[in-house]
Structures are given as C-alpha cells and as structure tokens.
Length: 228
View 1 (cartoon, helix red, strand yellow):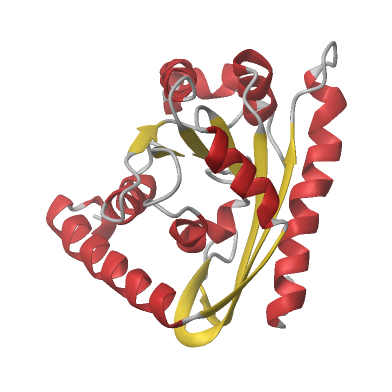
View 2 (spheres, rainbow, N blue to C red):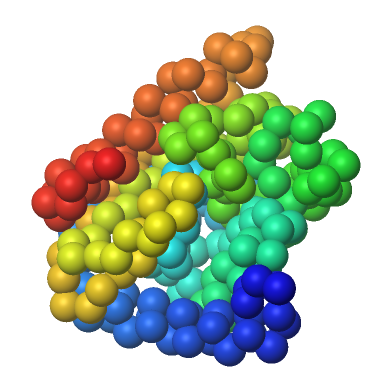
C-alpha cells in the first residue's frame, strides 16, 4: 500500500508540511508585481477564480492574505495525493472543494467533476476559489476547459497568479512540484481577466494558458529560478 493512502500517515505528513510551509513563507523575502489587480479583487469582495499551475500549489497560501481577502477554498482532486495536499492547505486556512478542473465529461465518473462544478459555483457566489487548470495529472501547463467554464457560468473575474521562490525543492512528480525553502527570495505576480461576452471556451483557453504561463515565468525571472 502506498504510504499516502494511509490516513494516519496523511495526517502526520500534512501537518508537518503545513508547518514547514508557514515557516518558509515567514522567512522568504517577497516581492510583488501586478498587485493592484489583487488589491482590486480584495476590495470588491465576492467571487473570484484564482488560478496557478499545479506545480506551484505548495506556494499558493502565500498569495492570499487571510486577514484582508475574502474567504477562499481550493479545488483539489479526489486522488490520495490530492487528499494529502488538501489537508496541508486546509491547515493554513484554505478548505477544499474536492474534484478536478479537468474537462467535465472526463471527470464525472472518476473525479466527481459535476459535484465539484456545482460546489465551485456555489463558493464563487461568496468568495474565492483556487483552481489548478492543468491538474490533477497534466499535461504540465496545458489548461483544461474547467476553469473557462466556471468563469463563463459564474461571471467571476479570473486572477492569474505566478509564484516562485529560490532556493526551492523540486519534487519528482509529474509536474516537478515546487516546495519552498526558508530565507530565500520569493515573487508573486498577478494578472486579471474576465470571460469575454459571446466567446466560446476554445476562444479563451489558449490565450489564458499564455497569460498564466507568462506570470509564472515572470515570477521565476524575478527570483532567478531556472524554468523547466
């Protein structure tokens, strides 16, 4: 049996990971670009889709100040690995909506896609929903249509977030996920968009992929982290 499938091991490891992340976030020297976009979202309150590539989920709590921003939940997959990550993120104040941002028809049976879509839209009526549009299994930096679909149905703005830190640990996972190390340099870059009136999902998936990749690449350039 894989260790992460054991609930006791999940609880222990997720608690350790959450504590480590909090320590790292407190000691990293952060810089910001495009923060006016996030400030506008926080001032307005209400629903917003926050999106970043799956490899940066370990940095995600750093981009959302709980003392200033609206309540946020994270859309995290139903896989055992997703449960482990969900626990670590929830311990930092971001409970999970369980499901997948993959294409809805493919997600229904195995990932609870329909229920995740309904729960996500419900959350967007009152607060923020974080989505990794290439999760839970990739391909890396390839956006599925789940994010554009939720943006179209909800009318909520989409906040693209690029996060980076250096030095960092890269896991041997499909997305080479990034975990922070303390006392380094960090960067968070924001951009914002809304679903264009009358557009099809396919019209925005490509441009939004480019914009999300661009903010991540910019954050890596600021910290000096090598791109993979």
